[in-house]
Each structure stands twice: as C-alpha cells, then as structure tokens.
Length: 245
Length: 245
DNA sequence: CTTACAAACGTCATTTTTACGTTTATTTTT
DNA sequence: AAAAATAAACGTAAAAATGACGTTTGTAAG
Image (tube, rainbow over all chains, first blue to last red; front, side):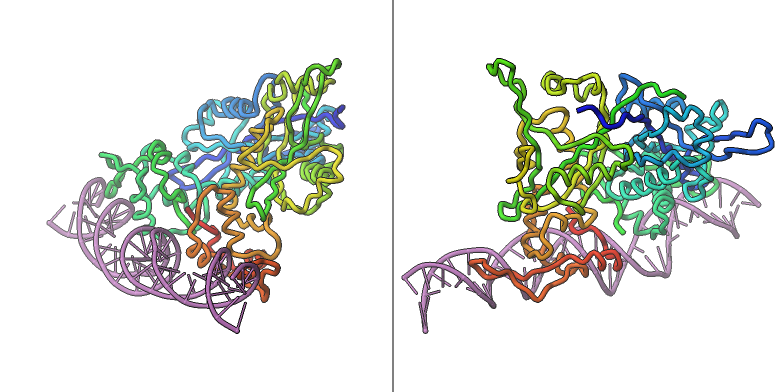
C-alpha cells in the first residue's frame, strides 16, 4: 500500500470583503513582482491569493485560520472550505515556474481552497508587509497560478450559498439598514431587486430584528437599523431561502 | 519556500445508490477484516469507503473516476467533489493503525472526498473481489477511519443540493413515474410530501416530459412515465428549486 | 420655512402553496 | 363477465407569497 505519489498540500484563501460605501464586493490578493538579474526585464508582475503549507499538527481549518490571521490580523471570521484544486499541471505556467525557484518541492501541490467573508474596512492594509490589495470581484487583475479560477469558483459557491443560508450578514456590520442588505444582494448576484418588495420580505423574517436605533451622521432621512439574530434563525426554522429568483 | 510538511493525498468515494424497489438510499462500502496471528482475536471487523492514492498524471477527478470504475465497472456517473478531510489524527484510531501496517507512509493523509450518484441495480456485486456491500444511509455499519463522518457530510451535501439542482434524476432510471420521484425525495430528505401537490408541481415543470408510455408488468393501474430533459432545464431557466420546504 | 431626497408605506392583481376528497384505470379475484 | 381491490390521477377553494407599481414621510441642509 505504498502511495503512488507523495504530494504537497497547501491551503489558499479567497478573502471576500464587502465595502459598504462603494457597494463593492472585493477580493484581497497580494502582489508578485520579479525582475531579471539585469533588471532589464520584468519576469513576473501580477497577483496571487494568500496561502501556505499545512503545519504538522494543524487541521486544514487551522491552516486557513492562520493564513487569514497573518494576512489581516483577524480571527473568527466566517470561513468555508469550498474546493480542492489538484490538477497535475496547475502550477506549471512559465511565470509560476520562474517564481518558484526550488521547484523540486513543488512538482505537484494540491491546494485546499477556503473563502472568508468580512468587511473591507476591518482590514488595515497600512502595516501590511505583503503588499495586499483589494480588487472588485468583477474587475480582478492578472493572477498567477490557477488563482483566478479559484476566485471565480469561490464566487460561484458564494452566490449559491447566499440564496440558501444567511451568510450575507457576515459581510455587513452588526447593525444595518434594509437598503444595505438589498445593495449587497445586488452586488453579489448582479441583479436588481424591487426595493418595496424586498423590504416587505425581509422585515417579515422573524430573525430580522428592528432596533431602537437609527442611522446617525447621514445627510438625509436616517434609516431604521436592524440586526440579524442567528439564534432566532436556528430556532424558528422559517422558510430559509431569504430571497428567491 | 520549502514545505513544512509532506503529505499524502488520496481520494475517497461515497457511492450513493438508490434502490427503487425498496425505496432506500444506500451507500456502497467494502469489508475490512483482520485476525490476530493465533486467530484467537478479531482485530478489525468493519467497513470502509473505497479510495486510492492519486496517480502522477491524474487529476483529482480522474482518481475518483478510476476508483469508481474499479469498484463498480461504471463510468460516466454523476460525481461531485464535496470536501477535503485532513485532520492530523484522522487515521490514528487503534484499529486503523493495526490495519495500516506500513504506517511510515501514512502518518498523515489528506483525502479529497467525492460522492457518486447511481442506481443500486447498476452495480453487480457478484464478481466483486473487494467484498463490497450496500447499506442504507440511515443504517450504516461500523466504519473505519473517519469514514462515517465523510459519509454523513456527503449526505448533508446531497440533501442541500437536491433542493437546488436536478440531481435527483441521477438516482432514477431514465423513465420514471411521478410517484417514484416523490418517494426518492422523501427517502433523501426524510420528509413526507403531499402527493397531489407534488404531482402538480412536478408536471408543470417544462423539463419534465410526459412520454407516450406507461409502466408495464405492474399488477395495478400502470402509471404514466416521464423523463427529465437536461436540455430544457438548462435553457428555460425556470425557477429552479424543484421543491421548497 | 422650503427644498431635496432617501426612507418607508400601501395596494391590487397574479401566482403559488396548502390542505383536503373524489374519480379513474387497470389487474386480480370471484 | 362482473366485482373487488388498489394505485394513479384529477379537482378545488382558501391562504399566502410575489410582482409591479405610485405615494407619503421624516430629516438635514440650504
């Protein structure tokens, strides 16, 4: 029962961040840049996801959590393992081979891909060593390895999941307005929703709790604030599809 | 960038088979049995999923396809990669350590788990070398490694997916009756559905095509046969949730 | 106090769902 | 050939949810 092939395993993280003010769903990626020795030629100039090898006594989830912490300083964010990518040639593009110098350890790496949901504003990019940068999910830069595919598959998974589970609230602040939820659905799904109908539907959910609070610091009529109650959601197993298309 | 840890990768397959006559959703597992040298003691006596290491020039999907073919002789069945299992201690139960004799190669194996959907009757267990056996998903035997957990997570994924995609038809013959579809939903989801309402709902789907055929060889009023048209389903993007709870 | 504007409310027609009871077609039994 | 048995198939009315709209309201800023 000797294994046919010994492989590496890594975890790659697609970090989705929602920017409430620009209503944009973003992905956090880091810069790859490499010049030739003479500096006459740019060999690699693109972006990649953050990822790392799995440590000895670490679960895959632990690795993902660690990678996110090192990148953003955050812990406890919503996390989902959504797919493993293991094609034998997935790291064998010319640019990627240049980038990976000690290629003997990298003949083949399978990566377990996770995505995280958080708010763009939670991440402080200032004191970040690895040149991390947000890009809107619909305007991604050039990406190394198979990372564009990984991001797109994560995005598809997210789209499906936000129709069947209340994960949308992971991308919003604790207190939010109805219109903010609508904007987020529209950003993620790329659709437009009738505000009056959406409003009625959402307010009727038992797990959407109206607070005794309104927006402050807005220059128009301040909107009512609401929160999502996971406790109620889990209990009153109401029809759980938040919206249907 | 030397990897911290070199790991094995395998693919494990949860084979779901639906038995139309007993209305039972089953899982195909294989027997593990080991006695002590004196034969006075049974060391291992349980079941496991089929799986195998990934070959050099094989994608993960290829490995899964190969494993299914070796087990059942079948190809082209519905297949889904649903999760990777990689906890460091997932193979370290006493029984599993006994079973794996050359443990130096197995200190840690991450498995990419797939599930397949097919009909129990398609599989001929007679000329099977590896003592494969079907068990109802709600009456699983004792299982080695973390394979019970893998099966249960596959089942959860299947439950969710059959509400949002027409994968249910992968478990049925090409020509089926309305009541057979209902029975299958009931088996998978563990619910009861009103036959008249279900019937109406299903018949109204454009992708459910009534055939010019009825059941033969039944001892009661023979039922109308239908088929599922993937082509129509993909085109007329009707509201795609087959049933809602 | 007027204006601008997003927030919030309201309604009606249509569709979908739910919760039931009855009829029909076929095989088997008498 | 008629009767019995049984699963298949049909029907319907009330309730709930959805879709497509137009109007009012509350607040900050001018």
